[in-house]
Length: 440
Ligand SMILES: Cc1cc2nc3c(=O)[nH]c(=O)nc-3n(C[C@H](O)[C@H](O)[C@H](O)COP(=O)(O)OP(=O)(O)OC[C@H]3O[C@@H](n4cnc5c(N)ncnc54)[C@H](O)[C@@H]3O)c2cc1C
Image (cartoon, rainbow, N blue to C red; front, side, top):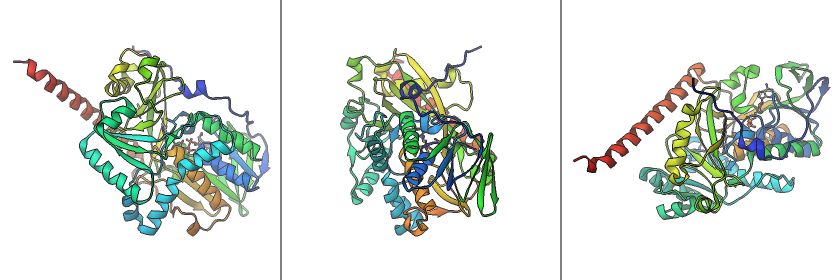
């Protein structure tokens, strides 16, 4: 039988230690309860604590144990949909405001890092979207033009420029968005937790909220060891939303994303790969995202395996992706393997909900949450502080569970398998084409 891979995130080895937080073992009161201690919850808690509110964060695991501690650390501006599409969907006013609000993500992330002195290897050197096909490049030309009209620093890159910036000859062009950058994701979320504590907030880890009830005009949240009562609750559980709020859970589909990291790449080779330190997410149908870490390991992620105990066979497509993008890395060992869940929404947009009076939720970043979850945290805090919906710059939408949600996971799995199969067939066709001239 094939042995299972040892799952360990590279970030857990290189991040500074986080704060030691107790579990909740008592009944207490607060002004705001935040459920979930990732970027969304901690940025919300930080803004609330800065505004003088007594805020309690309840986290089911340790800080950074879920998506915010295991992601690719790519700080990507905006949401997945293009600005013109958003304005067509929501109307020029609401769409335009959403585009502008989402675009503030990188500024917010790098400002918080600077303001709280968070040591998380932050680099604001831009984000690259390399194009795998000519048609993707045509789409990117439109995207770049839409951003230029809005004054953003987004450049269209030629094949040669992408080769120079990424060191990969795989791409026919691409985009460089100078607003983006990279962080060590676990170090960023741990730094946010430190900032919350220093600002007077309280964090309880290993304290899952297991029951939520309205009692006499306030919310009471029971955890495994205690309880908190407050007039306001923020749910910030994203892809890990559980049955605490079943309707909210069914607004997103949780899809696995998995990453591998190589051994440190020898210096001569390393200087040819992403020499200016950008991160990249390509336009492949099963998107591949990659970057170097501070010790020159290539970290690459793509849609992951659904099994909890993957073997080498399950990550072959990750290894193949690394070698397809960087054939020069053949022979370099893969030393770390890890994954997490991404929350996808039906319309591709993140959502801010008022679930019930005094209960807010923000989730659904569709794989772009480092910047956007931070923005959502600030939005949730502003709403909880009483900023009117009309002044938020982001729509507040009703909770609309997906019909047949139980089937969406099956659908996601089938789509991933179909796209992998197509990729495999594409590879076979290329190999046959390459062999054809030598057949006769
Ligand atoms: C492998 C991977 C790679 C990614 N790469 C990138 C990237 O490079 N760039 C990018 O922009 N985005 C990326 N993302 C997405 C990004 O990580 C997420 O969108 C973002 O971290 C979401 O933050 P969050 O705080 O909303 O959720 P999380 O970080 O998942 O936090 C939610 C927290 O809620 C807690 N929780 C759940 N239920 C309860 C409960 N009942 N009681 C108490 N606590 C509870 C969970 O334990 C968890 O800690 C990636 C995601 C994954 C999984």
